[in-house]
Length: 143
Image (cartoon, rainbow, N blue to C red; front, side, top):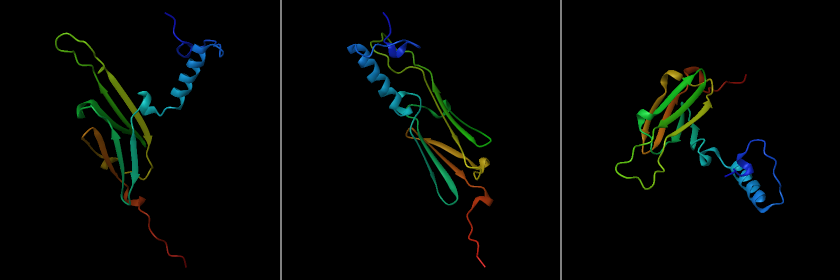
């Protein structure tokens, strides 16, 4: 069985054949899809308040010991990895397999990296990061 042109690196395609037209449509669809829909990522919301930054990352199905959050300089990394479960008895369908996702975000230099707190609730990783003391906006009087 040969793979469609979309899956063969460097393959030359004929755009006038019905199968090649389908290949091109599929290729366009996957190029335009957000990362969380192709399995390469997950949805994340980042918001800012006066004294802290909030990060909410959807990680459904992951347990807290399968999630690794790290920070290196100003780069926040959220990674989750789970292994597949061995089915009990005779398996008829197994779609829940090994899964690994990772996203990285550059944090503003105003984040106090020693104050980051993270908790997992209902499949959502909630993180709160305080801003550094010198990061608060202050009004300057114009004379």
